[in-house]
Length: 168
Image (cartoon, rainbow, N blue to C red; front, top):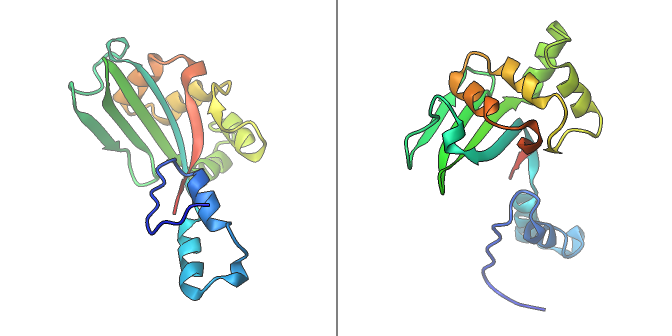
């Protein structure tokens, strides 16, 4: 075993370090301070859905960002965001986000709009690379945002990664 006064875990929302710290001993064996610390280690879904990819910058037309820059567009009040940035080595990283409750409420009004996305969220197919139909759905959802469409047009569906976002 190791004893330390500081541990930095930078391994993401599904962190092995966070999991270890939150579950290393029974909750009732801990002091109030330790219980509060454990609660802070626990990640929780924040309601946001995210899709992203890293692709050659030259494949995106029009250009999604200036060299070395970040472009961030808030597309209204429903959690819809477009983020593109220079990932180095002539590559662009792009992210698109939607709030799950917006997807579900929009789908209730127009069941054809997010039909496969809602089905994926309700089942087990949401998450990971290349879910069939994801590119077309995102093109519909982000149709008013040319930079999002340019990124999607340049990205093979098999390279689009999707997940639910968690925070703490």
